Image (cartoon, rainbow, N blue to C red; front, top):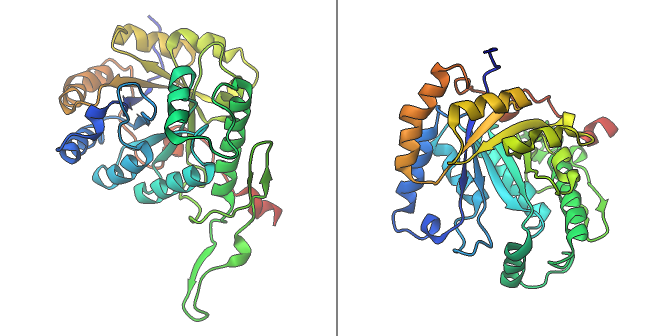
Length: 323
């Protein structure tokens, strides 16, 4: 058997369902989960559960910001339904997460569909600037615009905009803040952000893809998360080679064989789906992850920024180069 390039190891936790958010001991539960995974998995994808039939769990970006100081090594990729959330607010929340985690933040771009999308729209009501729940093409266009705005807002402060000059009593250099001045079909954003530029410049952006999905979101992302069976089809899509593939595995997958298939198909990372129970995380940390490392299938968890762990290039502010 030919050797494979070891994969970056991560986990995925779906935050949907009331059991995740309403238990009286939720703080202890999440603290136990993330500290168990810290230093074992290189990243954790926290999928926001808004609009789930079994009830809403905690907000993924808020939870990630609370978890980051408890776990100083693991990367945190927080989900947000960008066809329902204001891109300005998502941008500042992920920028804050990048500051709190010292460069370990990412955004999972979620696009709610079908009944779940309709349920979410029913919960929040009609909002100006948001397409109707059933307008699929408009929702895909709106999502692509929202990703563009989020990234532009991260760039709207130059890296050295904060000067803390006590002599002139200036906290920042206003000349190094920039309007993003975005105008799409559904909304406009002037900017700049209200949060300083993230330590990574651009936190990692991840998106899911499956056959039949619009390609735009996935090829805009740094990471594309998909099932092993869909990797070959995705790699044939225009622009797909620009993104790093993360194979997401469920409980039914035969683990060792699935990781070998994922690596052979072109994945660079793998994310194992966990239920969110601390006991399951402890079994993963004690048994599963060491066995995968011993078999040469995954790498030891790395340090440094999340972009660096995935081998992604640095991202200078687009506005600094244009100034």
